[in-house]
Length: 411
Image (cartoon, rainbow, N blue to C red; front, side, top):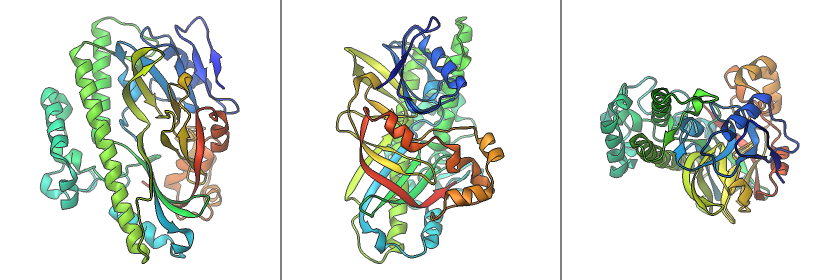
């Protein structure tokens, strides 16, 4: 069940699925800011992994009519999850997973890089043939059209540089894992989005929205809540660009999954089926046009997964915690949504100050993964308790599979 918050600063209520999960004061203020906007429909839905984000909290569902807030989508447009169950069992994996991890890291560029190398400006002939051929013609044409309409977007970028990020993981909380479920079946699961080009698109339209607010003397509780009104040319352009970035993000996850499955085939001599069950290739930072409470609305999910009745989704834990394949219950009050993960319990800076390498090694015991200072900000203790998060949203989803990672690749 959700808690409902209403006060004089809000135009609509806030419904929160956060029982038993802490929510910081800065996130609460952001939620009140969003709930004060004149175009929010019905209420704001808050997931149990909610925490402070740029403009709007991560872990919120914001339905609007007549306007869209680019910063509520964020700059990691189309970020999401993909998971695939194989016909392999735990006993089929090699005793040491170090070689498999190294091969996945070789096939899936990770960190601040792309297929052309760090800082690459990019040209088509620099891309691996498989990556260049993976880009559909309509995807190339779509980006060219966006660049043509908005030449400022094209500064320091080329189409080839953008597509050089295809099949790459990135940094931060993006990851690629090999997991085991409750029956010891082997899964491959990954988390990433539209990479550099999505960031560029998001940043550009956030700034354009701010320019529009200044031009029309619109006062907001936070300038990062700058919006684009429906019917304007910029609204239509943003919709086209964000939908393009969301498709690119899904394609990116698909390319990485193929590369990771290929590495697994090389590591395990036993033939196996890699498509026994695909949970879903789902976004959790995105915009969708949907129907709720009798109205057609724009639903922005920033750190939230769509969970319509029977719909499969993925809720990951952290590097040392369980993850879940879930089935949506279609709860209308959440706008058919659920959390996108455990949610950060503290900032990256605070995690680096609070935890040591020894803490991280202990927290990831038995998992083949990085155990150095550069991933301390991703250590399990930096995240909320995933079990508490799942209890708080038991009326939003049911658990289908429980996964525990045995290998984790981080950028």
